[in-house]
Amino acid sequence: MLTTVKGTYNNGQVMLEEAPETNGPVEVLVTFTREIEPAKQNAKRLFGFAKGKITFMAVDFDAPLEDLKEYM
Image 1 (tube, rainbow, N blue to C red):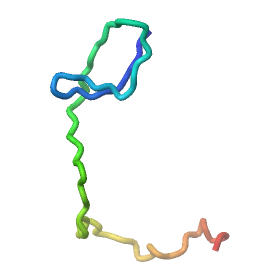
Image 2 (spheres, rainbow, N blue to C red; image 1 turned 180 degrees about the vertical axis):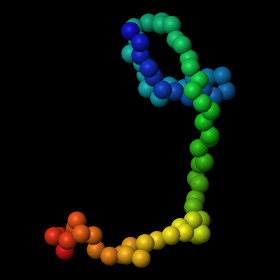
Image 3 (cartoon, helix red, strand yellow; image 1 turned 90 degrees about the horizontal axis):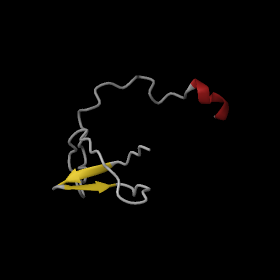
C-alpha cells in the first residue's frame, strides 16, 4: 500500500505534517518537489503598502447589483 504524507526537509531532517499509520519499519521514498520560501514571522503590513496598485475602478462600482435588488 502506498501512503502520501506531506512534510518539509530542512537541515538534513524531514518533518512530517501528520503521522503515517504504520506497524513497524517501512521503506520510504522522498521526492523533492520545490524549494519553499521561509515564512516571514511577525510580518506587518504598513499603511499604504498597496498605494498605486489599483489603476482602474468602474464608474458604477458602488451601484446596487441587479441580483440583490429583491433584498433591498
